[in-house]
Amino acid sequence: MHERVDRPIRGAVTRDRRLTWLLSSSTVSNLGDGIGKVAFPLLAADLTRDPVLIAGLSATQFLPWLMFALLTGALLDRVDRRIAMIAANTARAVVVGGVAALAYFDVATIWLVYAAALLIGTAETVADSAANVLVPSVVDRSGLEGANSKLQAVEIAGQTFLGGPIGSLTFAVFAAFPFLLNSAAFALAAALLLGLAGSYRPRREAPERDDPERDDTVRRQLAEGLRWVRHSPVVFRLVLIAGLVSLTSELAQAQLVLYALEDLELSNAAFGVFAFVGGIGGLAGAAVAPRLVRHTSRLGVLAGGVLLAGAAFTGMGMSTRVVLSAGLFGLFAAGVVALNVVLGTVRHAVVPSELLGRVLGVWRTLVWGAIPVGALLGGVLTQLLGRPSGTFVVSGGLQLLIGVAAIVLLRGHRGTVDRLEPVRGKDNSR
Image (cartoon, rainbow, N blue to C red; front, side, top):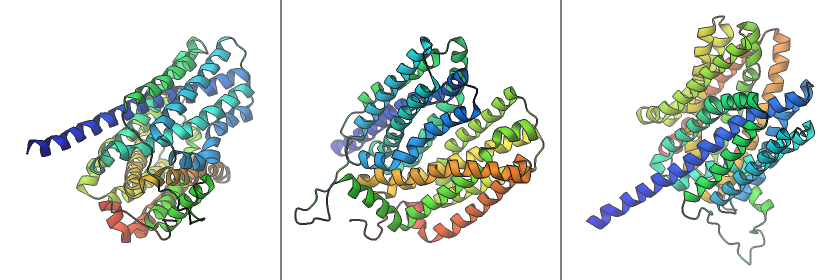
C-alpha cells in the first residue's frame, strides 16, 4: 500500500521540480529578451538615424524564424532538448557579451549590430522552441494547461513588465549596461537548466535496413513533419486558424503606435502606459485560461479568445476615449493569450513526442511568417483608409469571422480538442 502511494507522489514532486527549473530558466531568458528588444534599437539609434536601417534591425531579429524554424524543429527531434537549450542560451550570452564590449569601447557599427542580432535570433529559435517542446516531458497530461499558462505568463512578465523598462533605464546610464545584464540573464538561464535532471532526447525508431524509404536524414525528417501536419485534420486546422489570427491581428498591431499617437493623441510617454495595459491583459488571460477550460471547454475558450480579440479591436477602431481603448487593448491581449494557452496544450497532447520539434517548426514558420505580411498589409490599409482606426475595425471584423470559422472547422473534432485524444493522420508513419 505504502509503495503504491509513494511512487506517484515522488513522480509528481519530481515533475513539479522539473517544471520549476524550466520556468525559472524561461523567466530569466525572457527577461534577457525584453532587455535586448529595447537595448538593440536604442544602440542602433545611437549609430544611425536612418529609419530604414533601424526598421531593418527588427526584421533581422525576426528573420531567423522564417529561415531556420523548420531546421530547428528537425534538430530538436534528434538531440537532447535540454542540452540544446543550454547551448543556445550560452551562445546568446557570448554574443550579447560581445555587443556589450563593442558598446563599452565605442567601436560598434550598425552592421556589427545587425550581425549580432542575426546570431542571437538564430539561437533564440533553438532556445524558445526547446522550452516549448520540453513541456510534455516535465508535466503530466493533466498539467499541460497550467504549464502553458505559466509559460505565457513568464514571457509577458519578463519581456513586457521587467525587460523593457530595465533595458531603457540602464541604457541611459551607459550604453553597455543593458547588454551586460542581457548576457548575464542568458548565462543564468543556461545554468538553471543544469538542475533539470534526466535525459530529454526523443525516442526515434531506427530505419529498417531493407527499407530505403526510411532513412534518417534531416531532409527526410522535415518531410515527415510537414506530411504529419498536412494529414492531421485537427493540427492542420489549428495551424490554419492560428495563422489567420496572426495575419489579421497584425494588420492593426503594426499600426498601434500610430493609433495611439494620432487617433488618441497620446504622448510618447503615455503610449508606454497604454502598451503596459496590454501586458496586464495578457497576464489575466494566462491566469484565467485554465479555469475557463475546466468550467467550459477548450473549444469554447479557443473560439472565445478569437472572438474577444476581434470584438476588442473593433471597439478600439470605434473608440475615441483613451481609457476605453486601453481597456479594450487589454481584453485583446487576454483573448490572444488564452487562445495561445489552448493551442499549446492541444499541440503538446496530440503530437507524438518524436515529431513535436518538427511540427512546432512548421507551425512557427507558417504562423509567425504571417506577421510581417500582416504588418505590410496593415500599413497599406491605413494609407487607403486614411486613419489607423479604420484598420482596427477591419482587423477586428476579420477576427470575428475567424472565430466563427474556428467553431465550424473544429466542431467535428471535439474529442481531440476537449478530451485531448491522440490524433493520427494518414501516412503519418512514413
